[in-house]
Length: 193
Figure 1 (cartoon, helix red, strand yellow):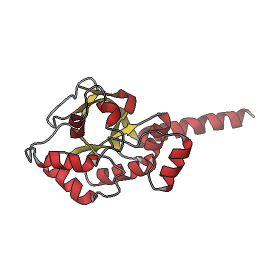
Figure 2 (tube, helix red, strand yellow):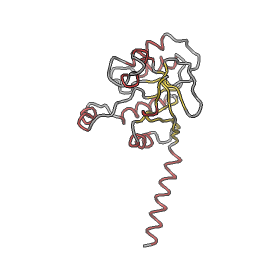
Figure 3 (cartoon, one colour):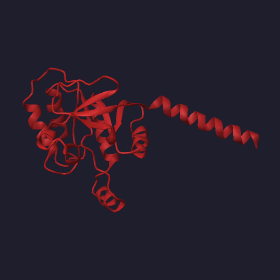
């Protein structure tokens, strides 16, 4: 009996240590910005470049940007086409990772060409009730798919910020992003200027 208890405790300790070593996720807070040169790298706060926030009233922009109002990636593409190229941008470029129409290779080349080396899943898929979530999942819209897109960005050399809705998404991100050094924040920890 004592042997089983010790084995279970050691096995649990091994799992925790192993998971801690293979997934290197750092928690940060974030601020939305329409200035790609904004650098907020103080006190674990990062900037998310989301030019679409300019399209919404300031008091409502955080809520409205997460609704499917227009093509946010297309809007981001048009804004980054107008900013100076080659200057490294300290902010994360926010993209809607579940965009079914975007040609990711071309869009990523445009993002890189504008000087971004960091990318994140913002806006992210909003949290819905179980019925809506099941319908979205059946259509290929899920946090799991967002993570798969982020993994492809990381494999392409981009630094990644994962925006999560809750602890369940953080755990899933830890599992999917095993071996990658990434930053993450909760959607509730994103502020606006």
